[in-house]
Length: 595
Image 1 (tube, rainbow, N blue to C red):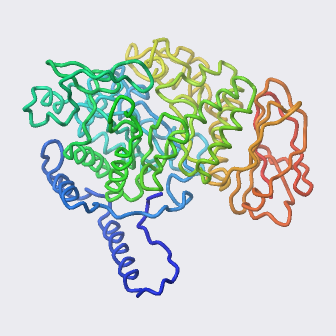
Image 2: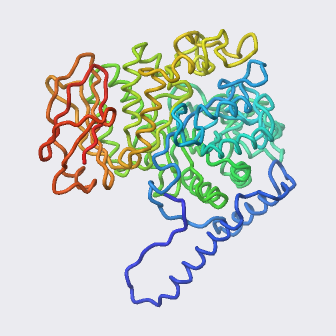
Image 3: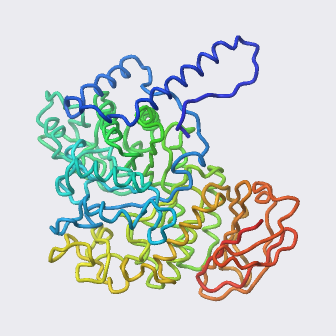
């Protein structure tokens, strides 16, 4: 991946060595300049804006475009374990539904600041927080919609959430607690109320006409996933909007558009953001009815975008929403020059299907396939649900044991897992239909408005089960779902194998253990065997054979001498490369440390 200057080792070629020395010197001077400069934008006045971005950024983008010289250095694939997000746990927040500080019924930035200690106090000894490493904020820029995925200004915080000063305070308070902040950046489209589109739609002679995609004739394209049309009529012309008429797609064949969105990305990094979740990133370019996704031009632009972001913040993380099969998702790694992480949609579906059915075979196949697609698994961002999906507690039902085993699988997987707010307490779907039901407010206590707001009612109805599903009802209670998540995350943080180790030995059980899935996570000096029972019946004790690969990667030779359950510290029998797995209750998980 790309988080440091590329200094490739070479075999002796007989060539004069001065070129290589000069290359290293230039790279090191570049890194030193960034380090001495500190956080971009700190301690200096904000430059005057020109057309929605600073004139300084505009000149820089123009220089890159005209000369063809990348603004940032090329970067080596720094080992995943050495990145700040290597093995991290991240948490998705919808500000509107998280916490309301001014009692208008709508969550806001100040409300989020007031709840940061719930996410991470910054004290390693604390046991009351989740210990998440980063927070992804759903869109918080000015927008006409409640969800924000159709911006009208990429450079302003939506006033309903607060001010720029509030955002800067969030960055300061989050960083003080060792929490990074990721913003949701929608590159593909804007709102049809954005001034750019209003100007573009004013007529063919508009200077911003080709900021969007127009056609004199209607085209019969439809969405790649449905029969919904992607061309929409306005003033006798048709414009391209993949998602719907209210979200016209930007025209990335226009260099000004490509530059503008890079400028927007740089702007928020200079404000202190640590990275981006890039929405609908598959769809930046389109070339025809059956060529609206995953085009070479999209990959080329993402490489340029990544270089530009890393020129501002070398350790920036770019997380992609590539809602597709895993092989398509993997292509967005781009040899380490595009995205840093991408969400694991295949994993999410397979985990929930295994828990729901009691059959882990499809999940075992999915994990095996993923291991073949990207063996290091450094690119993976596994999750259970998000703001676009039915909440996992609704999908799997009220049995908290199912939610616990799903969480155990998620936090056993390689990569950088994401939680969706409320998932850790078993928050269920709200009463509204459609997407709003998936985005109901967080439930903090058992009061009528669940501690979310002091207003008479929140903007979106509560799930309504806060007497048992709330932070206050579960905090500090042994056996609660919240306590389960807290323990899992702490144990994961303490294990090199679970944070960034390899995965091997993936297998579904047979016979009386047909509901069992097992795999090994191994890093130097650390081997953890993960075993899960997805069935509703107890599985008797059995013998499990360790794989040579896992033992080799952990450096345990000539043979392990001890095995114990991480939860309890209880020793279990081990002989050679065979471990005696204790009997497992229904819907349960074991982490077995082998030494």
